[in-house]
Image 1: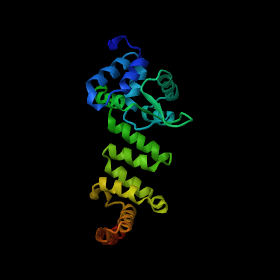
Image 2 (image 1 turned 90 degrees about the vertical axis):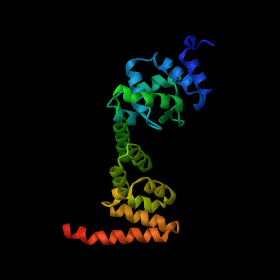
Image 3 (image 1 turned 120 degrees about the vertical axis):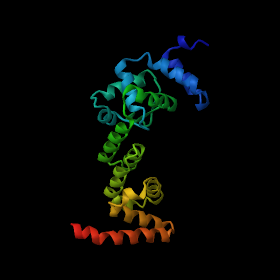
Length: 219
């Protein structure tokens, strides 16, 4: 089969039939398709590929563009590796092989992935999407920002009772980054108690109590 003679749409269909075990072929197909799009669209894909899902407003915020809706429509109309996630076609994701391909080439194009993640984290936080805000802060390995988000959203976490959800995040943040956020640590202790981990919860509460007098003395 001559891959070079395929249209981008046909190669997109071929790419869907490959798994991660065919990485070399998938890379070739993705590169061949992206070679046929305008340079600004190619740059847009590299900038937004790190996002697990995206909408036009998020892409505008992350890339600094104002025409993300048009670029997304261009990709969707040509069936170029883009998958709608809802009936209103507000949210999309890339085919996972294209996302891997583009993410691997982003650094070589001067795109700083951690900056993309942190901008996405800020957008998700400002739009009330707490879980994705923390996820992207963690992907950027900005543990201080992740801890601050947990602290900022502590009341909501308790109110909604998201125990397994919150434990997953606390396990990913080194404890030293949580020391400055007593409300987040109280939530952590609460979540541990709800999972019958009383000794660990008590250790955290004792540590919070030990630190509070010193904090008050400095205020």
